[in-house]
Length: 252
Image 1 (cartoon, rainbow, N blue to C red):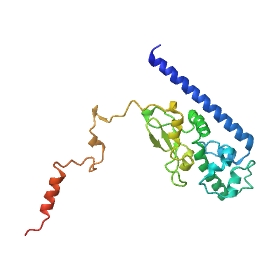
Image 2 (image 1 turned 45 degrees about the vertical axis):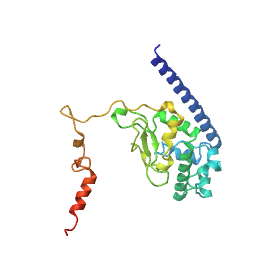
Image 3 (image 1 turned 90 degrees about the horizontal axis):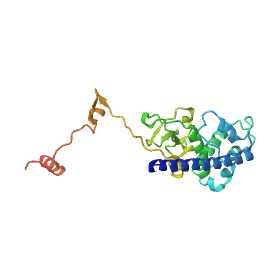
Image 4 (image 1 turned 180 degrees about the horizontal axis):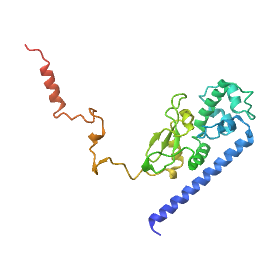
């Protein structure tokens, strides 16, 4: 067996081992949450709302841990709604309560997915392709991860991040209406720091603009009059400044 083939086998083995480990963590987290909340909780209802497919289930013990709530401002009734084990729409028929609960859960969610258990839960969704794929041709359908442009609420909608080309795009599903703060600006990078074996390699190909088979000059790819097209003025800046100062002097 060649050294290259042996290296690929070892990498594949460790990748499968990491996947198995994180899947077990995710299953344990999910079962613990379902056992404590049941199937009629507010969290279960919220996760099933169409357009919330990017969001994962946050365990109740993580939500109840006061350390994970440091810096978050919320009312007691908002937390009561988030942890409601038997959610009744008629009882909580208040748009303000629901919006506050969505924001609180979203901010807690952004913290949870940076933890080991949260990365495990999001890893399963990533492997299923729940977050979509990169639209770039040479990324060849690379799976993406959600990312926010701000850690503050109501600043921007969620985007998807491609780890192959390191670019972001607009989601092509209703999940694109989720607040970006639900995922934060650090999640994709923390994801691959904890799972380095899943980091894809950069694209090997790059699109080259051509005209009748000839490569186009870079000046032909920018708008006319842009700074990139302006010719560089020959001569030093010192000589130019001396010339300008001499021409601006008043005659004696």
